[in-house]
Length: 207
Image (tube, rainbow, N blue to C red; front, side, top):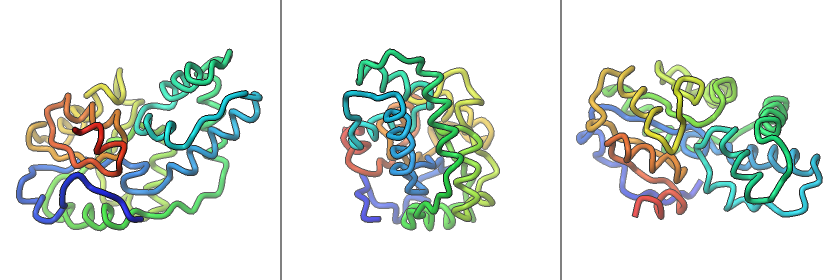
């Protein structure tokens, strides 16, 4: 994938004590598949308005229930966000996926994992995140994976990032976060961490 980064990854390892990686859209290009599952759910409830892909990506990194809440507001849907999130999650897990690895980020993760503590900090459901990392051949890199099931508040709150730093035994100020979702950029900065924004939506949030 040809992605824009807010800064070069070259030499970044010299500035960091640890690296935290988002999963969907950062390590692995899963966002189109997640969007397709949401489209399936919206079609099943006869949603009259369209959810564009770009608008969906604005919520990248948020927990499924929060994304569902935003979608219900955006499209004025008279449905339970929790029910829609459960249906979307089930549809996603039922599909056979072949998600492209984002090699520029995955290769960097493999490099810094040799010398630094690394973690995945994802807004995705634990089962989906574990499956995605395993299928991408990245699961063994990360002894620490945190998801919304582990905290009271997911992205854009800082809780996930602070928990990851705690599990790695590193001060938050020494962590660099690679993140493609605007909510993740907000959460990482709120945690006092440095951020490499990936893609236009995240880069705009960083400004």
